[in-house]
Image (tube, rainbow, N blue to C red):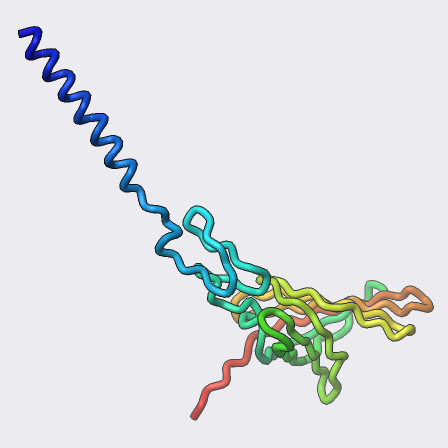
Length: 176
């Protein structure tokens, strides 16, 4: 009886160890089925995307979230004085794949400087414009179809600052 008990215990132990080895050897590397695109690399089942790309497989150019025309309003402050809200529009264009964009703001028939920048979801940063008289620094934040453009203007001689915020919604163009 003791011998049968020992054999059963040894058999059970052997089956348990064999089952553990078999189950752990069947674990599949999640990166074998994931196809990271555009130079992305897989780490522990997730694509690590290079700058300018996003998405589960790095299939989306970051700039595509930004590009388009936005209609909205601009509000500026200067020396703590709030100026009236003005109807405005903003256009963002792709300059270079995958994430170099340009920003043009329109106030009526006037366009503000064509800024160049880098899209990095959900924000974009732009080069500061400086013509020796005024310095203008823009930045953008995207939230779905909504855009927030911030402009800080500094008159270099006096140091006076003006801050403007454009809030707008992406214009969807439909084909007839």
